[in-house]
Length: 68
Image (cartoon, rainbow, N blue to C red; front, side, top):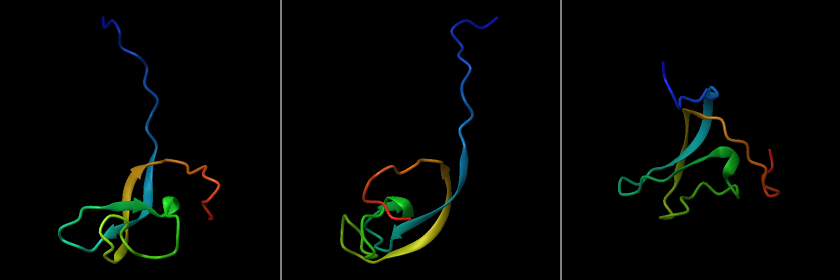
């Protein structure tokens, strides 16, 4: 018998397009659907970013600035 155990909802994951900083000194990455501009520059260090895919938890972007 287990007390205090809650039924947890399943976490939905899917392959997601992300952008990763190419600088070895920076570990910044961002989801494609959270980018605010079309520039492929790291917001932390200004280095170029490259596109990759990663399996991540699904997060919806409801921002007014996001354009699909």
